[in-house]
Amino acid sequence: MKVTVVGAGAVGASCAEYIAIKNFASEVVLLDIKEGYAEGKAMDLMQTASLNGFDTKITGSTSDYSKTANSDICVITSGIPRKPGMTREELIGINAGIVKSVSSDLIKHSPDTIIIVVSNPMDTMTYLVHKTTNLPKNRIIGMGGALDSARFKYRLAEALGAPISDVDGMVIGGHSDKGMVPLTRLATRNSVPVTEFISDERLNQVKEDTKVGGATLTGLLGTSAWYAPGAAVSGLVQAIACDQKKIYPCSTLLEGEYGLNDLCIGVPVVLGRNGIEKIVDISLNDAEKAHMQESAEGVSKTNGLLEL
Ligand code: NAI
View 1 (tube, rainbow, N blue to C red):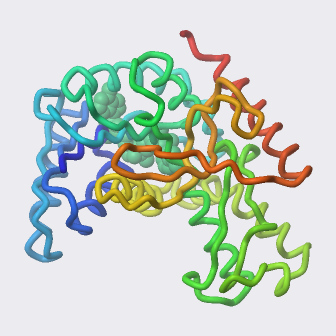
View 2: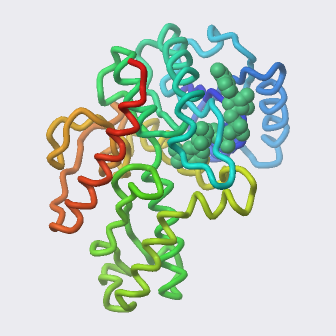
């Protein structure tokens, strides 16, 4: 199993590290436009192999896409992250050009690959890959919901005073502060609805804290987060590589599901060796449907800024 990660910055390197530590891939290739950067990160990570007990071979290159040839999965994290006070949508100008050229170069060398898009604004970047490549829709996956759901579970556990492993919950919708749809109605603690344990008011606070989870960290760190994003990407990569058939909310092209068309947005999907093997169309209540509709309008508005 060969995985390429483009962008050896905060998220790319963290994702490569988690993939290596989980020890399911034979090879990870890191690529970064900054001269020597990917080689350096790869060498540093390889020097953790004997300490962390993995056999994954990690190599780095500046711009030699031939090194990525025949990758089973390619992850795109190249681009700029937001600074405090910025929205993800403001990154579109620079990141669209980067994502378009990177995806085209990757596919030239790995025509059968599955692409995972991480660069922001992620739903729009995922749509851009659809519009500018001829990959089938099951092989283009946007990562956002897996991270947002992890942040939701963190906030739920905090509110419940429960261990995170006892808590389950999912965030669908667009990967933006306003667009996220945390499904509080379906969140559970050991199969019991969380509404049995906390007030609606507290649950609303959990929802709001989840939606600004990325912005909160950007304010604290001065740039966007990397550990949880890297771990979330590695989870998606592992689900595909190991054909786990796990359900993650991912951004995917909708063609009528959830009453939506011609956009990529986060919905639950089954991930296996063929990428997105099924879109899970869960029934939403009226309020959730309205929130999803509003979220889709936001994503479509950002998509409208693309020069296709
Ligand atoms: P970073 O600045 O640490 O790393 C980005 C790397 O991309 C840099 O090292 C840069 O040299 C490289 N790069 C730029 N253009 C390139 C090109 N054409 N080819 C190869 N490499 C290139 O940024 P960070 O924090 O790793 O974030 C990366 C992206 O991921 C940002 O757009 C950020 O907003 C997004 N992000 C998305 C998340 C999600 O849930 N979808 C979560 C966190 C970040």
